Length: 193
Ligand SMILES: Cc1cc2nc3c(=O)[nH]c(=O)nc-3n(C[C@H](O)[C@H](O)[C@H](O)COP(=O)(O)O)c2cc1C
Image (cartoon, rainbow, N blue to C red; front, top):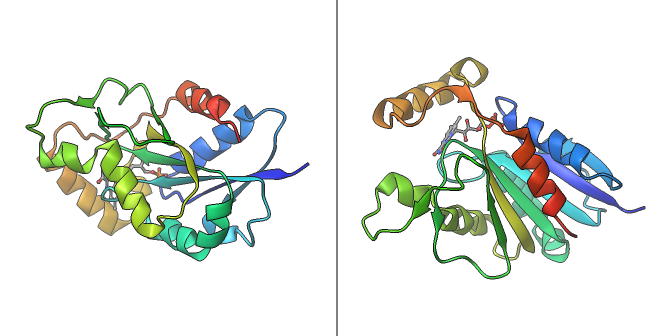
């Protein structure tokens, strides 16, 4: 039976946890879960890629993976997920790509023309545009946004400094573990390759 690859980078563990929940939720599927650094080839029937959101983008590790396997990823069905602290849906939805937001973001819509730069940079459409900068050939079927984890003790000193600053200027962003297993399972069960 052909395998589905779930691959990810994770610094403080939430993206890895999401990858494992997806693996458990894809009952009956032959699944392999690997960090992007351990992927040797793309001999799979489908690929699910997960990344923390770093400044609106996949991390450099995931970006490197996408670029390296750009041609193979263009031929395989791909689902993508971000573990992030914030996300806003827009009215205009891209064609052919399913968008899924977990319960933290499901009600967050950008509706008015007056949009803050934070909201703009955390819009689902901006995430998609940024992702396409790594490859515009991705055969993307679905993209999901899950609120993950922010724990200064679990990330590098430099990253913790940046995130402490972000928390200072945006009081909405606070340390904590926000992951909702049920929502991850719901998305995984919706995936059809
Ligand atoms: C360097 C850095 C930049 C980040 N930038 C953002 C950001 O712009 N917006 C956001 O919502 N979260 C941001 N985050 C928070 C992470 O996306 C979030 O903590 C994520 O759940 C971490 O995933 P992990 O547990 O797999 O490492 C950033 C975190 C780091 C370390």
